Image (tube, rainbow, N blue to C red; front, side):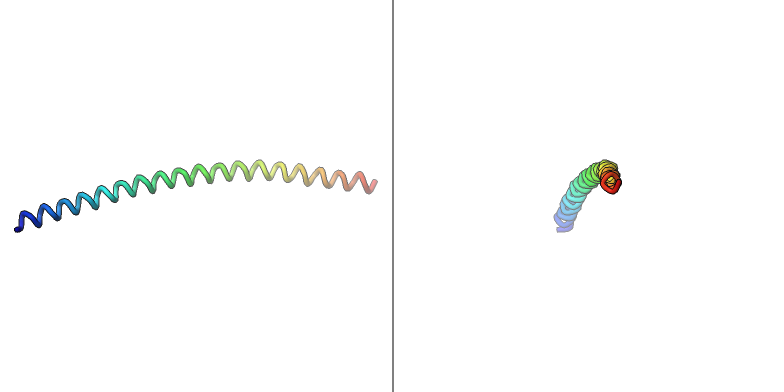
Length: 68
């Protein structure tokens, strides 16, 4: 009886370990994807800021030309 309980306990522990290992790998994969998305967003933000500043400067120049 003790042997059967010991084997069951070992099987449960192994299944728990395997599940945790798999979930850990999935979490790491999701973290990597999140980092990649964050980097892409930062690059887009930098590009948009430079474009926005350019458009803003063009608008100021156009207003100055209209007033002149």
